[in-house]
Image 1 (cartoon, rainbow, N blue to C red):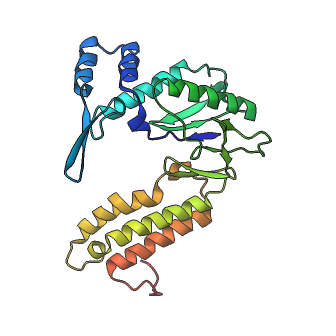
Image 2: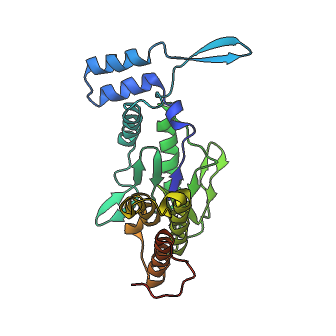
Image 3: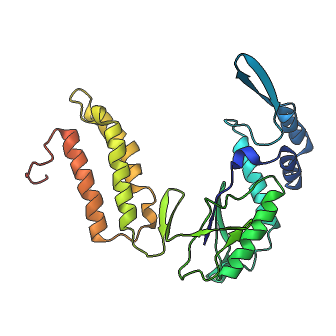
Length: 261
């Protein structure tokens, strides 16, 4: 596997490449012209020691604009379409899985290091056509067996790791989710401490405390749990953390030895 990281992805994609891409994907010319007009003559202004300098902007999508993520992912989609990977990757029920993409979070799959190297080079070349460049320092490789031939990009060797956080989920070679459950427990406690004054207040109605707990803390603790190979020990770890939080919200000393109802 190769976990891809792009350098300043949203700020790097070239505007002209965006218009070409969405035209290829069938977007109406009037809409393309409208978007082009929005980006035409875009500039940033810097003020240093009362001296103002205007800098023209010719690349990147506008931050905070609701259309920006769609323009960016359209470029990534076009890159994906141009890659000859129909028969690359790992076989799952007779179909080849060569990559997973969520916005700019991309992971490549291959059966051999040579195949992965070729896929990485092809992706890098296609990405360069729209102004994107892979960050070789943050891109990581992971393999079920030692990589005899390290992956290289732009003359830089890609670091091989045994774990990587992808889409907020810890991915490891060993199918053991103990570390991920520990991370999720810590994440839950971090959110709990953030709202501790509210959650342990004696003046706030319990229904509001319960709502905050269910909306903020439970998702933090159980994010990605659908993918866990959960054991009894892991389940007990999460349950124990939840019980401690519930006791704190109910005003019961955590060291209280009374049995739960």
